[in-house]
Length: 312
Length: 287
Picture (cartoon, rainbow over the protein chains, first blue to last red):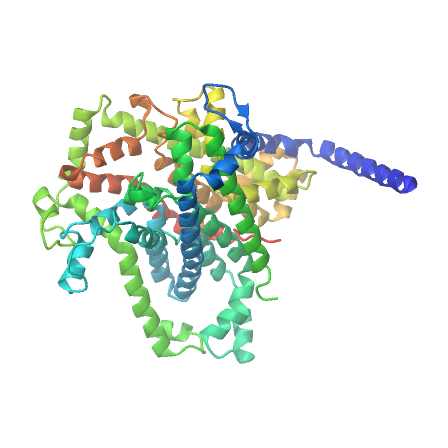
C-alpha cells in the first residue's frame, strides 16, 4: 500500500513538474488570457461562490453577515409560500416554453433552410427580430388590455366566444398562459441562429448519398442525415433554451405587474429581486439564487447527457 | 423560376413545398405583427391611436411622437435628452470595444495553443453560460460596491468585458483558422502580439460582428437601475421607461420609445446577418 502511495505521489509530482515546464514555455499564453480570466473570475466565478457563502448567513449590507446555517433554506421551503408559487411558476414556464421554444427554433431553422438565399435571409430577420427587440413585448399589454376595447377582448366578443371582457393580465387564471405566449414569441433567439448556420454547413454529399440509398421524403432525411450532423448545435441551443426559460422575470413583471395579483405570476427570479433589491435581505436572496443556480446546472447536465444519445 | 425548379431536391413533393410556403408566411406574419404594430403606433397621431376599431397602419403618419420625446424629457427631467443618449452610447461603445479586444486575446490563445489549465478554463466558461446573470446579481452588486463603482459607468462597462457568450463564440470561430497561417508569420519573425493583431484579428472579422451584436444588445437595453442613481448618468432606456410609465396620454410616445430601443440591435443584425451566421456555424458544443 505504502509503495503504491509513494509511486502515486512521484507520478503526480512528475506530472506537476511537466505541467509547470509547459506553463513556463507558454508564458505568453497566460499573459494574453489574463485580462479576460481576471474579469471573468471576478464577475462570474467569484459571485457564484460568494452567493453560496452568503446563503448560509443573515446579511442586510448594513451589519456584517451573521452565520445562521441552513436557516435560509429551511425558511424557503417551509415558511415561504410565495417562493413555492415562484418555483411552481418557473417550473411550468421552463417545462413548457423551454422544450417548445427549442423545438420551434429547430423546426423553423430547418423549414427555411431550403428557401432561396434572399428569402431565407429575410426569414431569419423576421423570426429572430422579436428576441432582440428590446422591451417590445410590452406591446402585448395593449393587445391583452382588460376592458372591452382591448383587441383580444373585442375580437373574441365579436366572434361570440366570450360575452364579457376578460381581465387577461389581472386574473390569475390567464396570467401564465399569456406570459408563455409572449415568451414563445421571443424564443427564436441565439439557438435559432446556431441552428440556421449549422444546417447550412451540413455536407451536401451526404444528402446525395441519401437519395441513392433510398431516403424517400424530408422526414426521413431529417432523422437519418440532418439531426446526427447537427448534434453540436443542438447542444448549444439546449443551453440557450434552458438558461433563458429558467431566467424568466422581465416579461412577467412588465405584463402582469410587480407584484402581480396574488403573486400568481411570480417567478424565482422575481422573488430574488424582491428580497435582494427591495427588502435588502441579501442572505436570503442568495439562498434563492443558489437554488436557481443548482436547478439550472442540473437541468443542463441532464439534457446534455440525453442529447448525447441522439443518433447513436 | 427554372433555376428554382432545377435546384429542388428530387425527393420533395410539390404539394409539400406549397404547404410549407403558406405555413411559413402565416407564421412570419404572426411573428412580425407586434413589431409592426409598435412601429405604426409610434407613427400615429393622437387621434388615430385610440380609434376603434383600430387600424394597423396609420392614415396620416407623423413623427410627432418622436419629437415629443424631447419635449417630455425637457420638462420632466433635469437632464437633457442628449445627455441620456451620450450615457448609453458611451457605455455601449466602450463596453463593446473592450469586450471585443479582451475576449479575442483570451480566445486566441485558447484556440491556437495548448497550455496547462486552458481546457479547464474553457469548460468553466461553458458552464457559466448555463445560468442566467440573475444568479450572480447580488454578489455582483456587493463586489461593485466594494470597488466603489456604484453610480459610475464602470459598474456596467467592466462586467460587460467578461461576457462569456462572446468569448465562447470567438474561441470556437478561431479554432477554424488554419494554424499554418500563424506558423508562417512566426517563421517570418513576428512575435505573438503581431500575429494576434496583424494576422488573426483581420481574419476573424465575421466573429467581430457577432461579438458586437451580442454586446450591443445587452448594453443598449441595459437599464442599470440597480447600479446608477444620479440622473445625469442614467441610461437612455431607463429615462425612456420613465416616460412610458406616464400613463395613457403617453401611449404614442411609449411606442416611440419601443422603436428607439429596438431599432439599433435590429439594424445591426440586418446589416451583418451573413457574417453572424458564418460565426454561428462554429458555435456547436463538441465533447
